[in-house]
Image 1 (tube, rainbow, N blue to C red):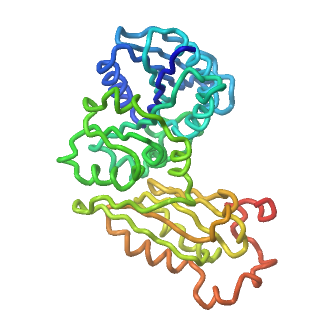
Image 2 (image 1 turned 90 degrees about the vertical axis):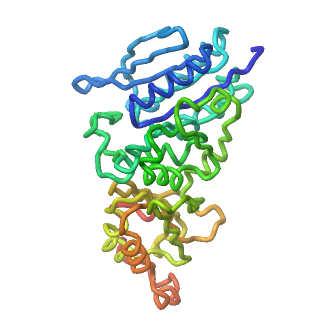
Image 3 (image 1 turned 90 degrees about the horizontal axis):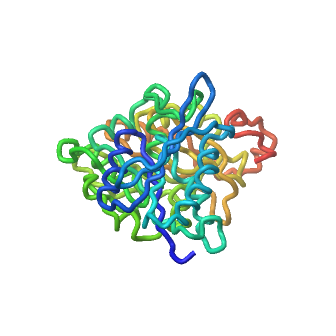
Length: 366
């Protein structure tokens, strides 16, 4: 193949915002192709709708039966051969992959990045950027509110129990480019929340009309940087503006959470309108790192894996705009092992009942 076409990924939680971003890029460059996917459900039977657009309008609009239990996997499996065809077609100089609304970009990039390397299935394409579009007018309610995706008709499936904030936070954390719609002057809290949550090494564009072809297609997505942004073991606090009342806590300790006190304080830490992510450990499972990922009053915990040579630690980064900061700090400190408990060492935890097994899985498996 004589040329390498840039390929960008677009993720949003709003179908209107997604289409507006697509149209903006197509108007900026009519020779760009946008491959857009939607998940359609009818009585439990899933269907993928695949639409190909360019500056002339709709080039292709087809519906395909959903034959894969994993919805995002099904989209990726259909997208790879179609993207390969687009690279060979010769009519377009760039391709935008617009994901189903509320889909996370990280798993897709994880699949496409190696496929675009020399010898890969998509070696005719270059993964240029991961983009998310967000509305400054609604981001406070979207990120910190307790709405579920299914309540807004945005779930990837009928059983999708994610909060709207969970999906949005994942997209903001991973994106190379955040395109901000809405009035950032009238909604300074929303604007500042975006600054606190988006990737520290990413770019921000205010106004979809400023989302230019060169910004989206001119660079190269760094897969390692993208993975680092989403790795809870590498979480870092933002230095975003605080003038509108948005704050970020950087809570860290070498000590682990006490399993019983963690369960007692988990609602104080997680069932509040904040965005929180990070990593923790517990003395009964010292070899394993566990993720803490919360938004919209929900929090998810689970195993990340080993510490990979890093020292075990408990580190949460929490962002909000209400009066929760002091209570969260107290709950964090209370959930940790005390200095006295820490100085006793970890041997006393051997053989204790594992009260976290229902949430973290079997200790022996971990």
